Image 1: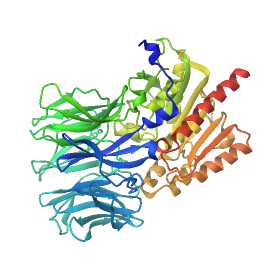
Image 2 (image 1 turned 90 degrees about the vertical axis):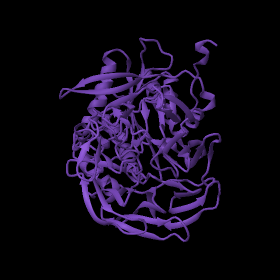
Image 3 (image 1 turned 120 degrees about the vertical axis):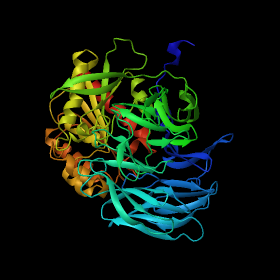
Image 4 (image 1 turned 120 degrees about the horizontal axis):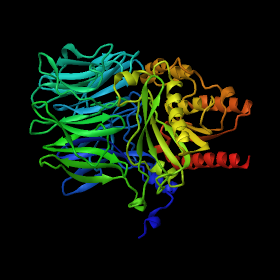
Length: 600
C-alpha cells in the first residue's frame, strides 16, 4: 500500500468514536479496574475490570453513569471489595454485586474519593454547608458516620495502621494554591482523635497522602516550587528525592494517584515537565531512574501490583490506552490491556507535533505543540487553529487527539499553547496568571500565532483561535483586540469573571476570584472578528445564560457570529453525544471565514 493511500480525511463519526477516555485506574481483588467513557453511547462512564487470563469486561450496571459530582469535577467515583462495587451516580452512593444490574441506594448526596478501609468504606461527602469525611460499614445495613467536618473542602481519606490521613483546604483557596495534610489516630468503626496538621500552609499545596509499606506517610508538596514527594516517619518530614518537575497533577479531581509503591522497596512516580510526562522509579537510596516508555502523556492514576505498574498512557501516535509496565527487567516490558483507537483508524497516518519555543516579553518562553497538516511537506504552509487549553491551570497534552486529527487531515495545522498559568512549569508560573487573566494568556497565544506568520507557516487571514471553558474566555478576548486571529471558536466559554465567581460551583469560586482583575468581561462592542459560540444548555460550570446574553450583544453591535446550543449537554462537549455536531460547526465556521476573505 502506498503511503498516499493511507492518507484519509478523519470523519466526524470516527473522530468521536475514537475519543474513548480512561480514568480512575485502580487495583483491587487481584484485578484492575478503570472508568471507561464512550462518547458514542452518550458519554456514560462504565467500570471495566481486567483480570489475567480473562481480559477486560464491564462490571457496572448497564447504562448506569458512574460519575461523581463532588466539588463539581468529581473523582474517586468507585471502589471494589470482595466482589462488591461501591459507586457514585448522579444522586447518591450505591452498591451492587459485580456483573449485576441490580443497584442498592446507600445514601442520597454528593460523594467522591471512595477508599476501602478495614471493613469500611471511607469517602468525602459534600453539601451546601461544607464537607464531611465519612465511614460506611461494608456489610449489613450500611451505617454512615462522619469522622471530620469543615466549612471548606476535604479529600483523600487514607487509612494507615491506627492512623488516618486526609487533605483539607479553605473556601478562599484552591487545592493547588493552599492545601493541608492532617493526620490523626483512628481505628475502624471508631472516631478520629488528636488531629495534627502535618504539611501545607499559605504558600504550600500538599496533596495525595498515602501510607507506605514501611508505615511512613508519603505525600506530594510544592514547598520547593515543584510538587515533589515527601516522607513523614512519625517524627520529621524529608523530601524523598529532588525532581525538577511536577510529581502530581493539578488537583481538579479527587482520587489522584501520581505515585505508588513497588514490592521491592522502590517507588514509581509520574512526573510532568512542560507538555511531557514521564515515569521514574526512586530507589530506596533516593536515586531517581527514568523508565523508558512509549508514552509522553500519563494520567495521574498509577496502580501497582508487585513490581508491575498499571497506567493510562498516550503518545502523539497512540491515543490513551491502559497498559501494564513490568519493571523487573532492565528493559521495562509494556503490555497493552485496552486501547481507544477506533478500528477504522487503526494504522491511519497522523500528524505528529514538533515543539515550538517562542520568546515573549519579560524574558519568558512560551512552549507550543505544532501539529502540521497530515502528510505535509517539511516546508508546509497552512491555515492554523491555535488552541487555548482549559483550566487555565491545565496544559498541552502530548498525545494522539483524534479531534485535532479531524482538522489536520483537512489541511489545517493545529497548535496547542502552554500559556502563562499552565501546570508543568512550577508554582510561580502557575500563579502568575492571577489578576492577569485575559491579558497574558492572550498575549502568549498571539505571540505563537505571530511567530508562525512571520516564519511563513501560517496563511495570513487564516489563523484562528479556539478554546474551551477558561480557554474559551481566552479565545474571545483574543478577537476583542487587534491581532493575528481571523475568527474565534469558544466552547463552554466563561464570559464574565465577576458573574462566574457568583454562579460557578463553590469549589471553583476561589479560582474565579483569584483569576479576575485582568481583562474583565468580554465586551461585545470590542469584538473585531467572527465568533462561534458552542455551549451546552445543562452546563453548570459556565452557565448558558451568559453566552446567550453575549450573543444578543454581538447581534446588537452587528458582530458576525453563530451560536450552537446543545440541548441537555453539560460542560464537557467533547465527550457528549453532540461532539460530532460541534466539530462540524467549528469546521464550517473556519471555512466560511476563509471563503469570505477570498471573495473580498
